[in-house]
Image (cartoon, rainbow, N blue to C red; front, side, top):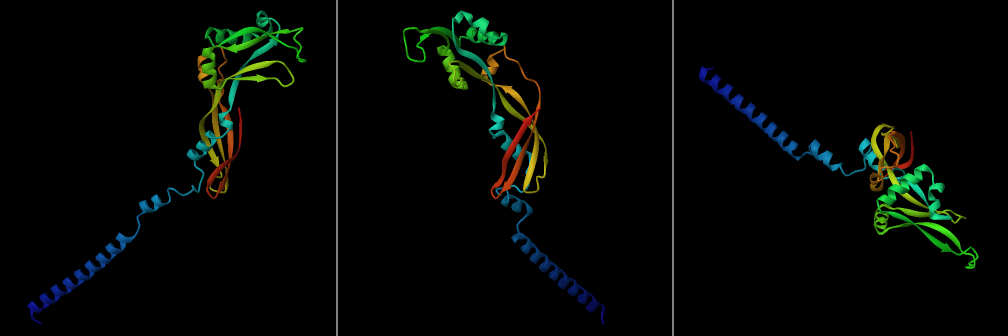
Length: 231
């Protein structure tokens, strides 16, 4: 075979091989273009219920629970039989300090009143001392859920002032989050309400509490079914 024929045959073989490789590459490229990427698959499952209980979700469910919205109150006697001047003798030292501050802030006052006896007789009226809210006191009471409570079976009444509310600090760990049930441990603390921030005479709790939330997985996701808190 002549030298020119050998070179021509080699060149043709190279062209054919390149053409096959190009066709193969084109087919692979077309096949890959039609397949979903990992990012698309991830986006498609974003809205589905979470398979595992993560700390962020556990924290949200714990924060929304009724238990973590409990409040701590300060109470003052709001009604008693006798003279208003007897208040300092009737109150504890803590109550007297709280009363003095509320009075200084212009929220409360005491007024004597005549109340008929339990039979409705007005012949022998009994004098009571009643705690009443001022106009400014009514505003803050309405905005901060102050409430007058009456003792069952008694003529006594109390003014309850919410001064602290429970606040979640963080979820510190989760056990069993990949099964149908899980438990999340967390820490919490008391934080002052708006009323609590205004009252400087109340005690300031500093202890960090601990708790545990118990979860169950349903078809629509995780639900908090029980919760315990303590110190």
